[in-house]
Amino acid sequence: MGARSLEGKVALVTGGSRGIGRAVAERLGRDGAVVALTYAREAAAADEVVEVIRKDGGRAFALHAELGRRGDAAALWSAFDAGIAPYDPAGGVDIIVNNAGIAHIANLAELTEDGFDEVFAINVRAPFFIVREGLGRLRDGGRIINMSSGAAGLAMPEAIAYGATKGALDNFSLNLAKELGPRGITANSVAPGIIDTDANAGWLRGNADAAARAASISALGRIGRPEDVADIVSFLASDDARWITGKVIDATGGSAL
Ligand code: NAD
Image 1 (cartoon, rainbow, N blue to C red):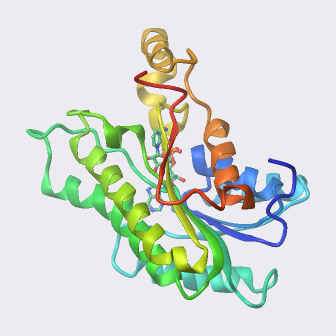
Image 2: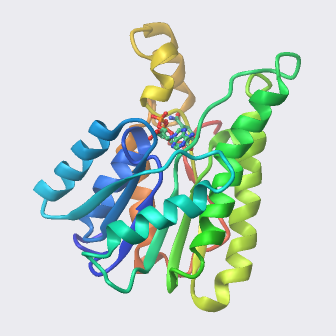
Image 3: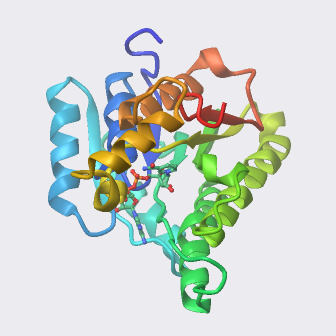
């Protein structure tokens, strides 16, 4: 993708304060989009991402959004409306990246109803209602990108509910593609493999054996970086990807080949 391919566009990235979401926010900012990035608890980290984007000549602002509860999407869009006004008085959005998510490590025997509800509320319900509540703001020709996981297509019994949330998200992308296609809006999932983020720090960083095993899963022989995923999101958000919709785009570096 050439630089500034998203000039004139507005992007919302959930969970943009760290990890994959941070890399996506920074990349879309470099591409020229005005980036609204949400954070739940890490206000200082979100401000730092905004600063990085601004130093790179981009435009961005952070907004607080604790996801996973009823009414969270409506609250997010109210904060968005206030934040976007100085940049774009019309208040529209072109790109929605539903990135925020949690892993839930539990097999069937360990699974609790609270754990199940939480992972579905954050990973599935929030994206559904962020799009639904945002429909009036989403411009024709827009993009919806849902951060799925390679886990959606694998049996990972130790994360049985997590995999199901990402499978649900992929079906959501499919249905959005059909419903919003007549408006030129595309909807796709991006499915990363193992990416070096804080979410994986506990078992991956400082554990040479685990890191070597994780690297060997990818055909390319290394663990993914947030930027590997962000570059794919950048492409999907661009005009060059206008004919791709309703798909799950692999971002695993050829895992399970
Ligand atoms: P991370 O834990 O580093 O970051 C997650 C982001 O989501 C954070 O910004 C966090 O604030 C936000 N978030 C979490 N719970 C939230 C809540 N209740 N309300 C609002 N925001 C909340 O994770 P990551 O590794 O960067 O993962 C980002 C996305 O990519 C997730 O959807 C994850 O499932 C997916 N993914 C990650 C990997 C991986 O290996 N890291 C692999 C496949 C898919």
